[in-house]
Length: 116
Image (cartoon, rainbow, N blue to C red; front, side, top):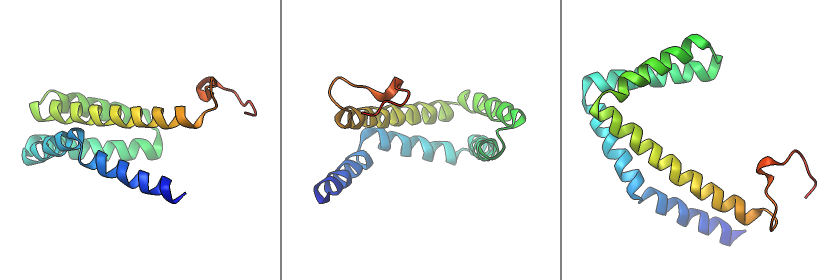
């Protein structure tokens, strides 16, 4: 297990030093330095929290409208794209881990409870 934990720290360091993280941090700084996009971002996070707590259609609509407004700004576009790239990289890492864990020729992604 010690080797696995060591490799996990190496992976975390590689992700932290990746272009995707650098782009996200730059986009985030730009977004937060503009008062208009800062306010939209603050509202977006607020609606996201409320949506997670309530799963309310009202907050879903407010979240979506605020996201659309944010994506109309240059800073917002860059931030959303950087976030998408990082999520894509993390999804790829998760897929690689899942493939390594699953038995050969078997995928649990569509599985409904086999005992393998």
